[in-house]
Image (cartoon, rainbow, N blue to C red; front, side, top):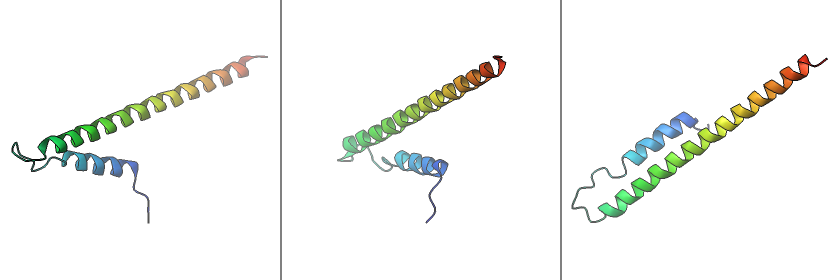
Length: 77
């Protein structure tokens, strides 16, 4: 079995979350619970994306620092 790409997983997950309250009307008995679940799912995705982005920024900062150190070493006699 091949592993699903991150992009495919993201699209599938976003579509599933968007559909959580599909067909839930104002008089649906579980509407509040369903909408709370959707809000929680959206918050989890949002927080995960922010965390992943912060890690990507940190990794880029480390690479930049390494490039700077390497260039300084190359200039030192």
